[in-house]
Length: 355
Image 1 (cartoon, helix red, strand yellow):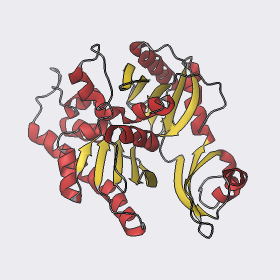
Image 2 (image 1 turned 135 degrees about the vertical axis):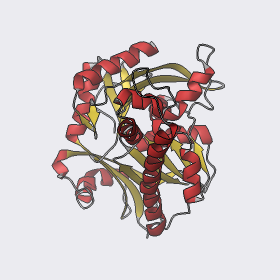
Image 3 (image 1 turned 180 degrees about the vertical axis):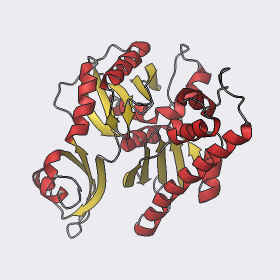
Image 4 (image 1 turned 90 degrees about the vertical axis):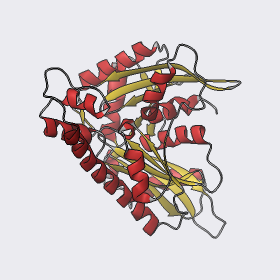
């Protein structure tokens, strides 16, 4: 969705997640795309809960911190939304022009959107034109207006101008296309594991054919470690990503951590594979060739191997920076560490880069 604000030649990708805010700016050079600026700022665990903004002030401060840390001067941003207040459906309609569809999309959408049509903003994209006798396929996106208002308000309060509102799953797809350059006929399941939301986007031959958001994510690991060890959230978060326990806590028992994380992994993989199985059972599209994991949650040790063992489908992690030019100011090890969590942010930053 394009928002009704002025636009410039430079745009900032701004990923407002449940656990952090990420900001990025890229530029196209003759040899490829270059990472110019990047900043990450943590969010308090209670700032965003299940998509609801409970502490807008903290979110505004995190946006400012991410922008300042990155050294970004541009004011216009692209951001992304996801969760239960966002609906994405592929629908079939009689052949018509884009102008005709623009006029009729609101009426068509009422059949597919489980919200009051007056409470949502709509967007669409024609993904396949059939022959004259056939129907065309349209990707329909609906987002609740109050969700959009939440995002645009905190961005404006941070002194920035929101110009593009994307869907998180599509931003990841943008980053995937650049990083992997998928071949014709390939079908990939893009699974972005955020802190509280998992975005699933199955892409067949460059077209999204199945999109679903699930209210689970990497935070479930942190909460289970908290319970198992009776420690605070921040300390459990460090243990989840491989950090040592603080000196004030009890000694960490590896078996307890492993058991807690294994249970979450099994549940997470189970929920995701049920969505993939639903796609396979109901879609006439091609079988999934590979699964691409992204998001901070995919950094959990052993998750990719467990996923592949469950599905018997090749599983890889997305590194959206893999083909990007980076200057000597970036620490390669640090970039590799955070890269899987940057899929949404990179995809947003690329929206103005004509790659």
